[in-house]
Structure formats: C-alpha cells, structure tokens
Length: 152
View 1 (cartoon, helix red, strand yellow):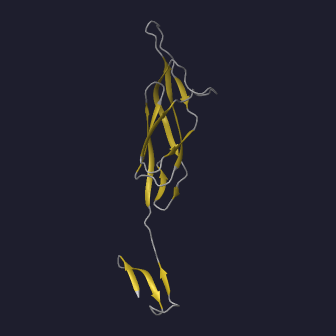
View 2: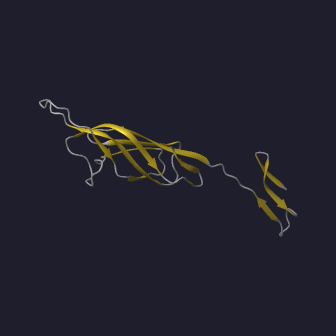
C-alpha cells in the first residue's frame, strides 16, 4: 500500500497490510522559506538615530542583532558668532537588541558616540548631520519554519 501526497510517495507499507510485523516507511518534507532581515537607519529627533528593522515574515525564533552607525555631526551654530562650527565624526559602539517573536517590523533608536573618545553619547550642543555607514548583523540560522538571513 502506498500513501501519496502531491503525487509523490509519502509512506510505503511493507509486507501484509494487517500483518502485526508490518512496517511503514514514511518520508516527510517541509519547505523552509528564507526570511531575510534588513534595516534602514535615519537621523531621528535630537541626537538619536532611528533604526527600522524588517523581516519578510513574522519571526518564529528570537534573534539578537548587533548594530552600529558612523557619520558626522557639528555643534550648535550661534548666529552671533562669525565662524562656522567644525564638523566632527561619530562612530557608535556596537549595540545589541533582541527582536520579538511573532513580529516582522521593529523600530528603536540610539545615541551614537563621538569618534575617538571613551565617553558614551554626544555633547549636548551637537547636531547630527549625516550617517555615512550603518549596519546590522547576526549569525544566519534556521528553525523549523525559516532560514534567517541577514541582508547585506
């Protein structure tokens, strides 16, 4: 006796159907979809950078991502000062965030760090100008539903 799914044998009965020594061999396949996860970085309010992360499908396993950004900032320009304020650079530390199961969009923000300093955050009179590079990362993995792939 053969059981068929979509025209392919899914299970095969060996020996007699009602024989107590009979065995069944089954072949089960599950299609696992790719679930690509990527991010978009934008200048947010104040000194914050907003991160919008999205997946192709709601995730079935928690994913902890790492993320960072680099760019430029200047200082508050006093209109009574004749000179232009200097442009400086930020190079954020590497942050981590765990994405919630069952969702496919996440939004959060962070304050970057001044390049070359050990002090976290930005000066209070700083104004973010540009994001020159930004990234998220996690180790690609699979669960029973998806192959989770970090977008490049």
